[in-house]
Image 1: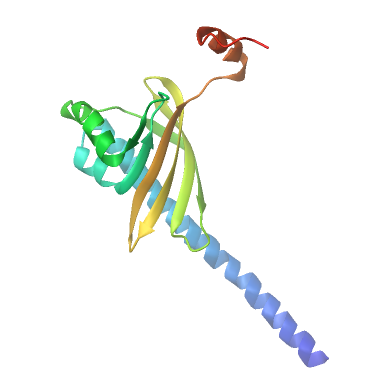
Image 2 (image 1 turned 90 degrees about the vertical axis):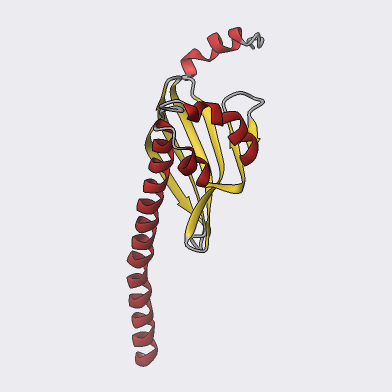
Length: 162
């Protein structure tokens, strides 16, 4: 009995010691992916199409603010390339980014707020790890609207108030 209790105590102690390692690993991924996403936004700000489009997976989907804006990578490049011929394509400054990860840390998803020329927007996305490289597989850009402005917005959209 005493031996069983000792073994159980050791197992519990070892299990509790593993948790900080997982957290540290997560922190490292958060730091790495924050740098990647900040660099992606910066690439648009300085009109660097190679970095911006290069971080998108070959099957990536970009969802814009317009209901018709659902682009596969090549369609998004075709549409957006004209903006990258300027000094800046667009300049979105992210803040309040929150990350989540799959159990094996091979997928990550996030949401972030963005300062933009349209006001505050929300971005969200999914990344996958391919070998030792992360790629954006989906990005969704959405306008934000304060709840107290919803009725005014519905009137602009000709949506009946209920």
